[in-house]
Length: 134
Ligand SMILES: [Cu+2]
Image 1 (tube, rainbow, N blue to C red):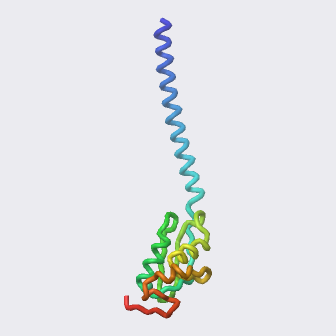
Image 2: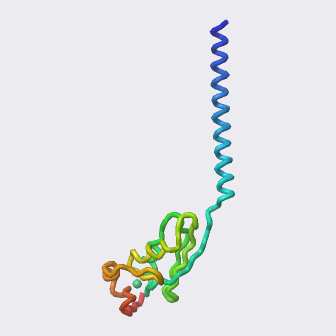
Image 3: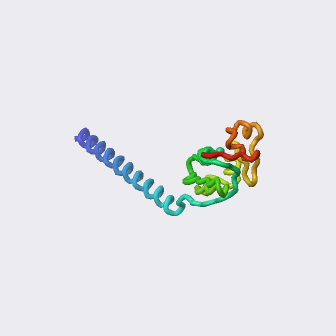
């Protein structure tokens, strides 16, 4: 009989192990979901001035902000305003100025590097009064 008893214990232990695994997985999921409910991504919108002249500038500027945690980046070259909707837990406002300056566009706070600026297409050279048709 001891062999049978051992077998029974083994089965019991296996069953217990499975119960513990399932329970901890469920618990983990609940904790994760509660955490997300308490701390939803803080969606924030921020607008600032970015110098640019055309549709190409718009594309360049918006692409520079195509990152995880940035939900929306809309540049209006007529008003030269860039509006960013983002997760405030992941970004600080000044980072957007730097990202835009990195691709050659001055913002109200950060000036783009001269070399990067000089590599822009002529019609995008906003510092030199560029105007373009597209
Ligand atoms: Cu342009």
